[in-house]
Length: 339
Image (tube, rainbow, N blue to C red):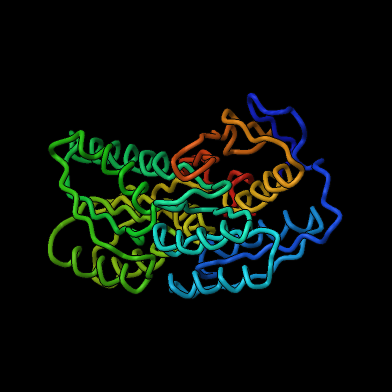
C-alpha cells in the first residue's frame, strides 16, 4: 500500500488519517454489485480503510440486480448504519436509495461509479474518460503504423451503458477515434458479461476483418476475447501479420500477463485498491467536521497522483488518473494487477 499522506489544494492541510473518531461505534453499510473481477479488490480496499479507522462494515452484494441493491440500501437504513458506501448497479436507479438515506440523515458515498440525477457526499473513481482516451490513442497509433494512416475497423465491447463509468469509457475512446474519418467503429453492448463478450467477438470477427478491439473491462473480457479469436482462427500475436490490436481498461492481473505474452496490447490501469482506502480517509475527515475543498490531491509514489477533486452536479468527485499500460511498463510493481 502507498503511504497515506494526502494533500488537497485549498483544504485544511491536515492528514486525513489523523481525523478524530466519534465516541460511538461507526458502522458502514457497503453495497457491492458483485464480487467479480475488480469488484473484490475494490471491496477489499475499503475493508482495509475501514479497519484502519476502527469501523465495522456490513457488506452485501446485489448480483447485478439494481432493485435488490436499493432494497439492500433500505435494509442498511433500517439498521441505522452510520454511513453507506456503494458501487452503483445503475447510476440513475441508485438515486432512490440515496434519497432514502438522505431523508434518514445517513451520509452516502459511491466508489468506482458515480450516480446520475442525485447528489451524494462524495464519489471516488478513476478518470474513466481519460482511460478511454488513452486506449483510443494507443489504437490510433497502431492503426497508423499498420495501415500507413489512421484507418481500419475497430470493435468496441461496452460495459453496462446505464452506468456512467461505461458511458465515460466509451466517450473517451470514441472522441479520439472520431477525429479520424478512416476508422470504422462497431460498438456492441457487453453489459460486463464475459459470455456476451465472447459472443460479440465471435459474431463480429467471424463476419468481417477487424483491426482492433477495445474492451470496457479487461477483467471481464480479455481472456474470452483472446480465446475466441484463437477458436475462429483470427489470432496472431503482436508483431505477426494478422495481429488484432486489443486495448482496454482496468489492469487486471490476467490481462497484464496477456500483454506480456503479446496476446493483448494496451490497457488503462485503474488504481483499484486505492478507491476504498481513499474514500475511507475522506469519510473520516467529514465525520470529524472538516471541509473538503476542490483542488488537486497528491500522494507520494501513487500512480494516480495527482488526483482531482471537483464539485459536480452529483457531489464532490475525486478523479484518479489511469495509467496506460503496454509491454514497456507492464512489470511496474505499482500496478494493482502486479500486487
